Length: 433
Image 1: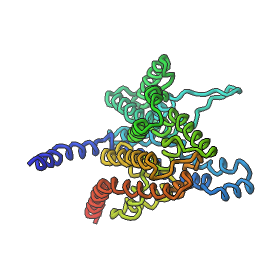
Image 2: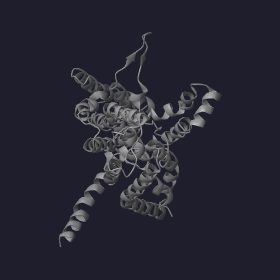
Image 3: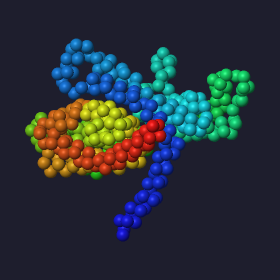
Image 4: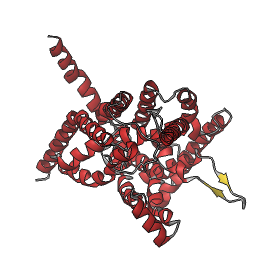
C-alpha cells in the first residue's frame, strides 16, 4: 500500500511538476543556448587530445620534431573554443529567451553579452592596454554567464514591454529601429550590472567572478585527505557542475596543494622503500574517481554511443565517446546536457561518490595498491592510467570495476532519457509525415 502511494505521488505530483519545469521558457532557453557551444567544444576536444596524448614516446617525438611550444600551438583551436564557452552561452541563452518573449533577440543578446563582460575585472599590461583573462570567458565564468543571460534578459524584456524605448518612425529600416529601441533598456541593464559590480568590489570578495570561490575556500580548506574530506570535495565538484560552474577548477584551487603534498609523500616513501602513507592524492581523483571526467561519465558516454535507440543520442554518443576515453567530458556535459538537467542529477553525483568510496576502501585495506606518487597525465585513458598510477594490475582492475558500476548507476536514468527522446522523434516524424 505504501509503495502504491509513493508511486502515485511521484506520477501525479513530481513528474508533472518537473515536466512543466523542464518546459519553462527559462530552462528551454538555457538548454538551447548552451547547445550552441557544443560544436566548438567537440572541435576543441580533438585538438586537446592531440596535444596531450599520454604516451611519452609520442610526446618526445613531437617535442623533437616541432619544438618545445608544439603543444601550445596545437591547442590554439582549443583555446578558441573552450575559452569562449561562457561568452557563447550568455549570447545563446539571452537570444533564445528574448525570442520566446517575441522581443528583438539579437539586440537582447548583445546587451547581455556586454553585461557579462562588465562583470569581469579588466587587466592592464605595462603598455596600458586593457585585456580580459580568457579563463573568465570559459566554464569558469559559466555560472555568471547563465545568471546574466537569464536575469538581465528578463530585465531588458520587462523594460521593452513597459515601452521604455526610443520609438523610430515606420520609414526607418528595422535594423536601425531595433538598434535605437535597445538604447534605453540596454543602458539601464548595463547600469544595473555596473552597480552590482561596484557593490561586490567594495566587499572582501573583490570581484563578481570571485564570489563562489570566496564562500567555498574556507570550508574546503578545512578538509584533509581523508575519506570524509574526499566525499565532501567530490560532492561539491558535482553539485557545482550541475549549476554550470566548473566544480573541479573551484575545488582543486583549494584542495590541490593538499592532494599534491600527499602525492609527494607517497613518492618519497616509495623511493625510500617504505609503506605508502596516503590513499587520497591527486591521482586518486584524476585516475580513479573522474573516469570520463567530472561525474564519472565514461560509462554514460559508452551507453550513448552503443546502446542509444534515439537518433539524436546515437549521434551525440559518437561525438562524445572519443573525448570521454581521454577524460574530457565537456561535450557530454553541455551536449546531453547535464547542466541544469534535473533528470541526470542523481547519477552524476552518485557515480563519482561511489568511486571515492570503493577506491578508498580498496586501497586502505590493501586489496588494491595505492597511488605511488607518479604524476600520470589526467588525459590517460582508464585501465592504462590505473596500472601506471599504482604500478600494479590491481589498479587497472579497480578502474574497470568502477566503470561498470558507474554505467549501472547511470543505466536507469539513461534508458528513461533515451525512451523519451525516441518518443519525441516519433512524434516529430508523424507530425511532418
